[in-house]
Image 1 (cartoon, rainbow, N blue to C red):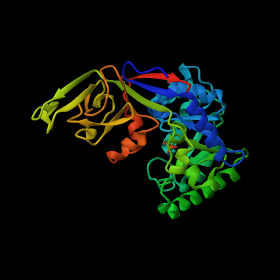
Image 2 (tube, rainbow, N blue to C red; image 1 turned 90 degrees about the vertical axis):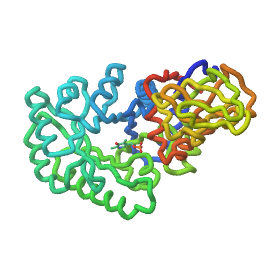
Image 3 (tube, helix red, strand yellow; image 1 turned 120 degrees about the horizontal axis):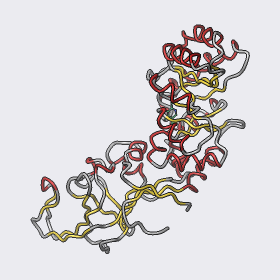
Image 4 (cartoon, helix red, strand yellow; image 1 turned 135 degrees about the horizontal axis):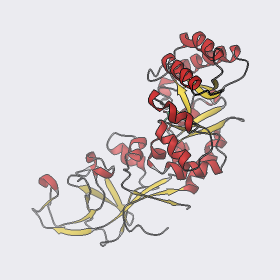
Amino acid sequence: MPKATQTILEIDLNALGHNYQYILSQLQEGTEIMAVVKAFGYGSDAIAVAKELERLGVAYFAVAYAQEGVQLRDAGIQTPILVLHPQEVNFKTIINRCLEPCLYSQKMLHAFIGFAEKQEQKIYPVHLKFNTGLNRLGLAQDDVQEILSALEGSKAIKLRSVFSHLAASEDKQEEVFSLKQLDAFQKISKEIKTALSYTPFLHTLNTSGILNYPKAHYDMVRCGIGLYGFTNDAQTTSGLKPVATLKTVISQIHTLQKGDTLGYNRAFKAQKTTKTATLPIGHADGIARAYGNGVGWVSIKGHKAPISGNVCMDMIMVDITGIECEEGDEVIIFGKDTTAENLATAIGSISYETLTAISQRIQRVVIRS
Ligand SMILES: *Cc1c(COP(=O)(O)O)cnc(C)c1O
C-alpha cells in the first residue's frame, strides 16, 4: 500500500468482500443480506461499497433517508433500496428514483397510498415496520387489520416486506426481552401473511442479532456494522476485517523544554524535554475533543503516541518522545491494529460513532488489499 501523504480514509473493498462472504456463511440457508449503507456507508464510501456489494450479488440495500438513496441511484446502483426513515416531503423523489419506503405509521401508509394513487402508480413496492419494543418508529400490532384493509383497498402499492428492529440484540442479558420482541414479530407477520394472497418477505435482525438469534434470520437480515468489520462479539469480529483505515502524516515536529506548553489553553505542560508532532486532523474531521490530553492515541511506526493537549479543529498534537520519526512520516489513527472500536471504547463510545464521525473533508481512497 502506498504511504499516505495527507489525511485519507482508506476503504478496502477486499476486506468488505471478505466480511460479506463471512456473514453470508453464518446465515441459515436461503437467508439473504440487506446491506445497510446509510450515513455514507458507516462513514466509508457508500457508492464504492454499494457497487462492490452489488457486484457480489447482494439482495437489497437499506439507507436511512431518501437523499442517501438518490446518491446510490445517481451512481448507477440498480439493486432495490429500502429507505428506513422516509418523510412525506420526499415521496416524489422516492418514486422518481425507484426507492422503497418503510411505512412506519398509519398516517404514513395512508399518505403514501394517496400519493402513489395520484401518481397513477401500480403495485409500487413498500415495506411495513412494526414496533415490538424499541419504541422508536413502527406500527402497532393493533394496526394490522386496518393496514390489511388499506393494502387490499389500493392497487397503487404492494407490500414487499414486513420488518421490526430489536432494542438490545447485542446484549445477552436482555435475551428475554429480545425473544419477546421476536415472538411479537412472529405473530404480526403470521397474521399479515395469512391474510394476503401473496407473501411479503420478513427481516428483523441487525448484525448482532444475526449472531445471537439464528432462529430469526427469516428471509433477510439487515447487516450494517458487520460488513464494515465490527460486531458485538470479539470472536466473530476477529473473523472480520476492518474496511476503513484512517491515516495521516506528520506536518511538523517540535521539541518542548521543561515548562513549555502545548496547544490551546496551554493544556499540556512539559515536565521534561518532550518531542511532539503536529498532525493535519482535528475535531472537525471527527477526532472528538474527548480524545485530548492523553485519552486517545495514534500509531507511528508501530509505536503508540498519545494525543497531547486539546484537540484543535483542524489539528492534533501527539507526544512522540522516544519514537524515531520525521516530518512527512505516515501516522495511523485507526485500522487493523488500533481499531475504531478500541478508540471508541477510550471515550465511552462505540465503533458506529467513531466511523460515522469521519467528516466528508477527508478524502476517501478506495483500495483492494
Ligand atoms: C442501522 C440499522 C441496521 C443495521 O444495524 P447494524 O447493527 O449496523 O448491523 C438495521 N436495521 C435498522 C432499522 C437500522 O436502523
